[in-house]
Amino acid sequence: MKNRNLLFLTEAAMIAAIYVALTYVFSPISFSEVQVRIAEALTILPVFTPAAVPGLFVGCLLGNILGGAVLPDVICGSFATLIGAFFTWRLRDAHPFLAPVPPIIANTLIVPFVLRYAYSIELPIPFMMLTVGIGEVISCGVLGLLLYYALRGHKEEIFRV
Image (cartoon, rainbow, N blue to C red; front, side, top):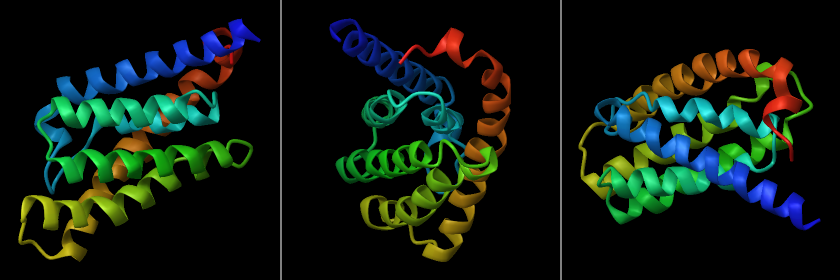
């Protein structure tokens, strides 16, 4: 039991670290009203391991802090990722094409309000929903599904929880 908890914590920490690294490396396109956060491709990982849910939340939280986000963005953006990761985990036995839908929806609905009220971006919220949504479809949908198909045959080798 102790080894299983340690393994869970280790997987979550590794996923968080990768999320932070990807957010930092791709920071020019990870923030603002037109964004493709490459790290969001990792939101497919709850299909493989429940450790991805807290790992993605902590990774997003740290990525936002290190990226210079304001407090409402740190909290709400991280919460959007947590919601998306949790519901992706809940859909783990469904068709793979459904797995990216929760993070796409969560971020499309939450992030534009953060941009408007935390950063005072004056673009219409529906327009920002469109731009954030397109970025999420690219990162979670396209890149996330590519990651899924790259990992699906190696689940037992990579994820032990």
